[in-house]
Image (cartoon, rainbow, N blue to C red; front, side, top):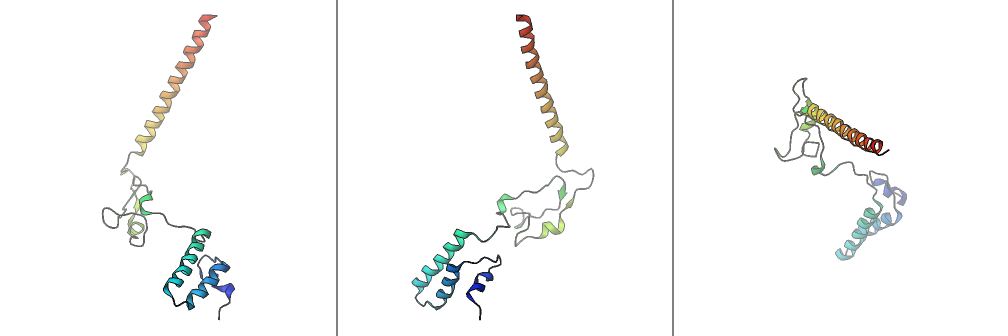
Length: 141
């Protein structure tokens, strides 16, 4: 027979709550569906309030993956689903592999070059502004 201290440890998080454990035992013997429903709702409320679970997965629509340096991503359901592991899709783990040298699918180098050019242009503009302001002050003196 389990003691009350052990009931909370049934959770895979090792979470313990005395009120929850008491309600767990109580709901087992309540016959009235409405009364049992109230107990279960309170149990759910306790779990919600204390949040004993740390979320280890994210909604499918928040995926991030690098498709410029990796190939073989598999969507499930085909064509529209996520590519990262879900209970329905492990194929990306099986088939994703680095893109071979010279076969880059994206423009990561082009993006880097564009960023460098933009920064250089900003530096030139800033230098011209500073130079023109300094030149105006020299003429005033």
